[in-house]
Length: 303
Ligand code: R5P
Image 1 (spheres, rainbow, N blue to C red):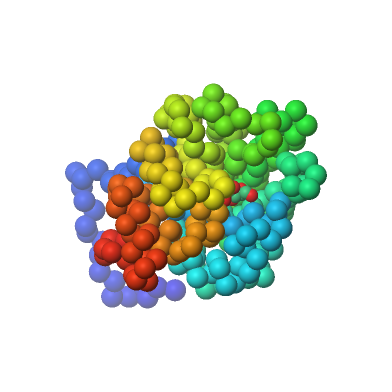
Image 2 (image 1 turned 135 degrees about the horizontal axis):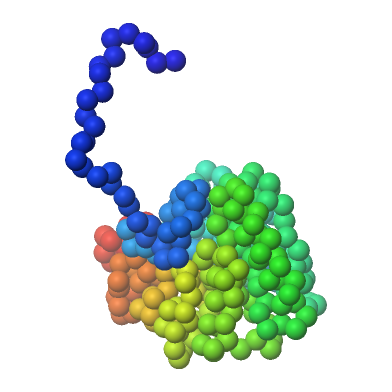
């Protein structure tokens, strides 16, 4: 208990100076509660307003896909360069060092694999997400899938409700599926449905035409998945185009961990996302790291 004697009287009340009010830097989350904003500010850099999320949750539907056979060897060395990691609770508990001190976007649903029908999902336990110190709850939503649209939207709704109880924001993940197209019309609908149902951030795909319409019609931030492995320059171009059209970051996996220089690639992606690099500059960053094991410029290491 504070000492009751010898205290200095309070006198600096700042009379006449209005209390400083700070707006929140992520669109659509101004009215969220403190816990949600605080966790979002762990994932997204308040200086740039953006995030480089490293996704390696693929095993929950794909098994040991290329680059994820030994996460301890391939992914753990990359974690220090990410703003946030996206993975399952199994990998978190078994392989990711708790000392990495990175916010976690926890894969919060599980169900079917690529061997059967994707997107038939159930949810995990919110108390486990709390135990794991999750900063985001990631849930797949299969808009337009006649078999799983309803159940996955209900999953999103339940996740948002559970997250609100504990101040953990929800990441709506627009699903992949054989019959789901990835044009602006579909992506606008899918992202908007996730936002309308309360997701704080949406992960979706970039599309070549009218991606800015997808971003603008979504009231909360969008991050893009990288998708299947592309040549490094093409992946950086994809990230650059998405950022230039308003994406708040990337949640990228294969184009980083399947690269011939994963560290070079994540540093190059950081240059695009946080430092306004051109594709040429970012590609130079990747190539220099690949050749010399170090960055071409200081800001590249500005994690
Ligand atoms: C898919 O299983 C996951 O949602 C991935 O996190 C997502 O697809 C992002 O990874 P990638 O950049 O490899 O597409």
